[in-house]
Length: 378
Ligand code: HEC
Ligand code: HEC
Image (cartoon, rainbow, N blue to C red; front, side, top):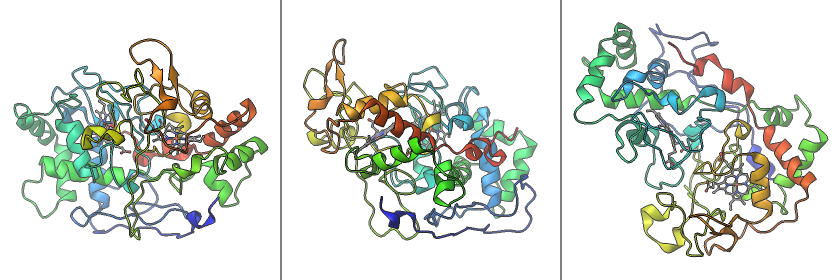
């Protein structure tokens, strides 16, 4: 394990703006974002300064179903706090019942992402990512469009609570209720969704001890036999991370051998990964390595939710990919030409697989999934 990853920076960002905070929740102080000691300071956008008021407004909007075309769905409909902001479905279902091709991602520590979603290299901020669920048509998620846009804003504007919240968050503006400001506020709320108080973190700080099985799993995870740590690396257990002092932005995507339909290298329709953006054959089936924080709570797994348990994820990695023997997706993922060299047949015994699962479960942050600052304010 690379100790340098765990550099203790101990930075706590405090509220910018301060003053006139009428909408503070019950948490301790004026701090907008409280970082664990082993987390680096995040890089925050210059054009959307973080403030306690924006975060509070964003929290209401995140949980508000009026923010969808037909009033049935909010961000939280697919991002449930108790599941580390995933939805428990293999693939999400939008406000008009459209089936999303992909699995809802956790929002823990999204402030550190370089690119957003499973395989889109061009979504580079929370603000730009949010245009997809709000306005996207393929698939429809929240279903806001030209014809209902004004109505959605009117619904928000009709709630007196929002008059106060928007004024506090955007005090310089006369008519602050716009989609631009809605996006800025929800992005601000998401930036505060920090998860770093798992048993694993507590053990790093010497506050608790991992069990023998968890320690064996940890050694396997960070060792050259299982190779997990190459892609699930660093304080956030993923390999696309940006923070305040990052110099080079590295955005790797990987093919882990999930599919190889009829030996053609194809993945199921709508889920070809990075290839959909680059049209390069070598990018077929490449996805972003998901952070493994809270992974115990985010089943089912992978970009399309096609693996239902952590035990099966370990079987999948131990086999060096997945063989699907019948049906429309039949094929030998182990033989995919783009598969990463780090995913190969590994001789992991049942015991070793269950030790790694035990280690992964130490990444669950119970405080994060019950923190009242992140919960439904209505
Ligand atoms: C219909 C369900 C649904 C709704 C509603 C929804 N999301 Fe998502 N969210 C998803 C899915 C599915 C993905 C993965 C998308 C992909 O890979 O294409 C995702 C991905 C994300 C990501 C990327 C996380 C990462 O690690 O890169 C963010 C951020 C996000 N959603 C925020 C939001 C916000 C904010 C809202 C409300 C404005 C919202 N979502 C509404 C289902 C939903
Ligand atoms: C070559 C890089 C790479 C290596 C090595 C690797 N992973 Fe992954 N991992 C990924 C990628 C990429 C995904 C997402 C794949 C997809 O959805 O198509 C993923 C997904 C996962 C998921 C599902 C996460 C979720 O939220 O759905 C788990 C759990 C996981 N990996 C655990 C492990 C373990 C344990 C090991 C070691 C045995 C390991 N990984 C090795 C790249 C890697």
